[in-house]
Length: 182
Image 1 (cartoon, one colour):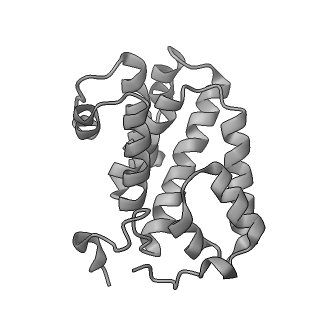
Image 2: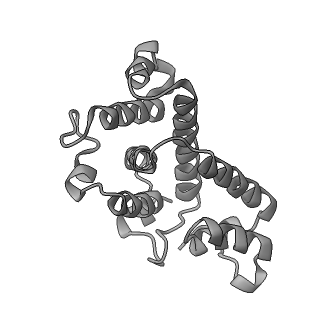
């Protein structure tokens, strides 16, 4: 169970429910985040703008999202974004290899995204120019800025979901291994 009591659907701001529904299936998440509808609406406005103006391949966005979520061990985001990545053509073997030291089965561009997501998520203070140079072979500066925002957003969502112990969408309860952290 989440640390914050989920709001019943009838107590959620209708504008928030509609906005979130337009973005995807996040009913359980919204029931918790809905305690602050103004903030949650603003977040989904930002996500919608990011999605509509993106010049990145959606599969690469999901690859970055899964990488960050695996690093942070966010059960909610691993569940959501792994499903999206699989739907966009990534294999389960690739998902399983993301955190390997030398992940197999990825293109050079995908490996650059994985390496960058790892660097930004694990220790951004040690990020060096060479870490971005690898991305420059595949992405322009606007795409690198977007990718960085996407990685930063995912880190924030991971922290939010884990701090409040929001269970993976539709699964009801937090997995036992993650529920005990008092």
